[in-house]
Length: 175
Image (cartoon, rainbow, N blue to C red; front, side, top):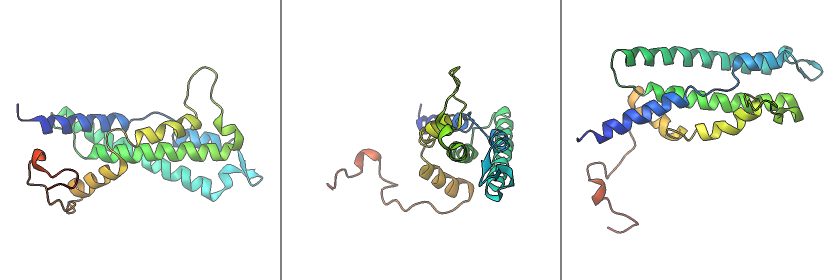
């Protein structure tokens, strides 16, 4: 009783943790794809832009992995999940969308093909599902505000209604 906001925050943090573990193609699959394709009549891996993107996604994956381990350690000590789940969620969903889109671009028209066995681990599937993940558990913009305020300690947005109970906040331009 009286801890509704705390329960809501814990629920959202757990949802963000789950969304931050979204499955789909990652840097390893992108590397495997790039080994089989050509860009400008050369092996894709000889293209600096391709290598740069794969390296960036690999670094993001490493950061996600170690941040998730940190969250698991905190939870094993009985601590409440914190704003680091906002970080994993925003990075994971954006990475998945970027990998899906870039993989489809590299495969040209073949990028929209899906496996016959019903598994949708494809780049196309990642591209289709990532926008929903970017909304689930809080939009990118909300998560950036959380990271700015709770992780970086930046000042919050100015809210003139912060000290007013929600039921007393003027609605629809009426005061």
